[in-house]
Length: 380
Image (cartoon, rainbow, N blue to C red; front, top):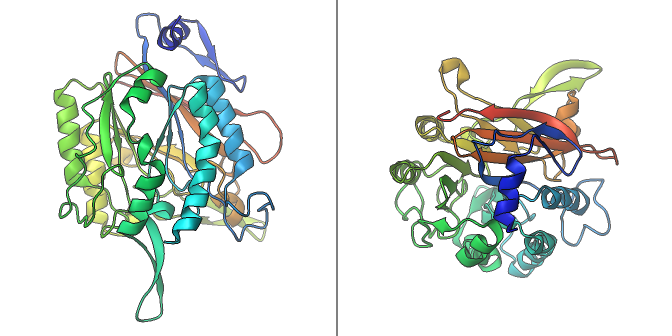
């Protein structure tokens, strides 16, 4: 039986269990799975983290946490694994250092690819930006063409090997072109975005990957490009639109304890740190086309409908919990779920429905468990 047929057979079972032993309801036999993927971001280590081991120091990778996630994704037989950026510490134009960090991450991904899951990378700020000293003495982190070129040199072969994609996923990648990114001069972008911002169809599922820190437009989403991309996908009959970027449109405020009392929240900024009108236009496009946005950057898991109070339905899933120092742990966050490493497993069904399960684990050796599980109805 082919890999694709095995997945469809699983979809008809009464109960599906993940590699972690967590069970969840399967779809009805008349609503088969059309695509099954996993996603997470942020596995780079912090050179100042007191928990940094001697083994991880040369490569600045959260090996233990990422290896566990990879094993669980492999056991779940996901067709694709979309990695949401910050897979390297980066923040430098030292090409030898960048190549070393990318090579280690690629080595960790290799067993997953060999086991039959296609790994698709998404650029983060640690990949595209480097530290630049300003005339006033301040140091800024800015995206630049050199770092974008290092990205293409190190992971560009994964964006997109269409023959390998079809062999591993069982679904052809259609409407793909390496020469169809946002053009310099649009969306404030000043450099070549090939293999950084891109999209394609996997059956009725449309996958759009965006670089949220392009040269000349740090902390933005390519709104004009996405709007045209979504419209074209819908015209082709796409039933699901999934968008993958590094920076979140809306940051998550989590409660923090101070002197034994919960009295403040901490928040990492994303697209809301710069041009808020551009962020709002991005989210309006997500809402208008019934897309779901998966992102990282904030080292935490949190999923919600940011504009629900205003009548919005679209989900933003922050899943930047792939091994980098957890934001809530560093800040003294009080909620247990905020202090766990996590990854998302997602099923797209023929009806247009989406099912999301978040698997998480703590810093110890306890089994993974379900942190959150929900359905996204068709057209929402």
